Length: 256
Image (cartoon, rainbow, N blue to C red; front, top):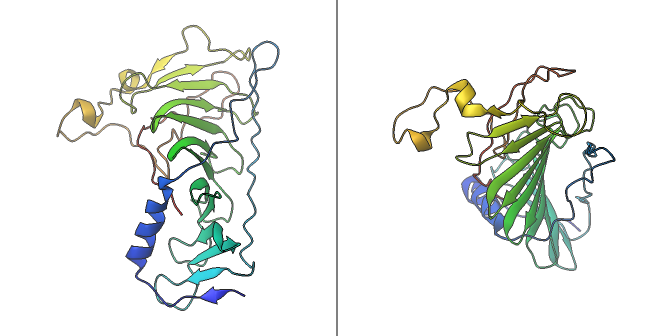
């Protein structure tokens, strides 16, 4: 039987949700294996992990006092296994959070454009964000895979034209807003000589880290739940017209 808890302050509820990402578990995802010739394919399908919101023993929380559940916590054997959260109180689930047997967050699924489909999957390892799999163009399939090391963004792989083959590699040798972007334009699966773009050098953008307290007027960065390049370079052959945005090493707060 599902229980319903009386209204609680929205600020307190959402703050607790953000703080819940202190835990983590080992990621089951990993880099794709290159095919013969070096081409790397990735599965672009977005797979939602089941979270039975109608299971017995669940708990409903009302954060804004409107009599409707904004958070549904699913339990098994008395322990939480997952929860669904409506962050903006519009009646639609924005975030699913999954918890391991030790009570640590292992996975988070987020919907940013309110269409009911997952746009980002975050995977946690040893208490820190390990991977972000994103549909950055919001077209219903994954196109960007980010990997973190020590809580910092280490590298990004990108499928810029939606064919399931990695054709862009982002490195972050300095500040995260200034990636080095390598592109494969001839389809051999490897960065092409002369294709590397120094993002900040090309755009003239000076990140805050290099300006101190001065205000910048460089290119804007779209950040939705995770600091991820949401645009890509025009691909000389068969590109889809997207342009690159910088990555960021800042780790998004987890949810529970």
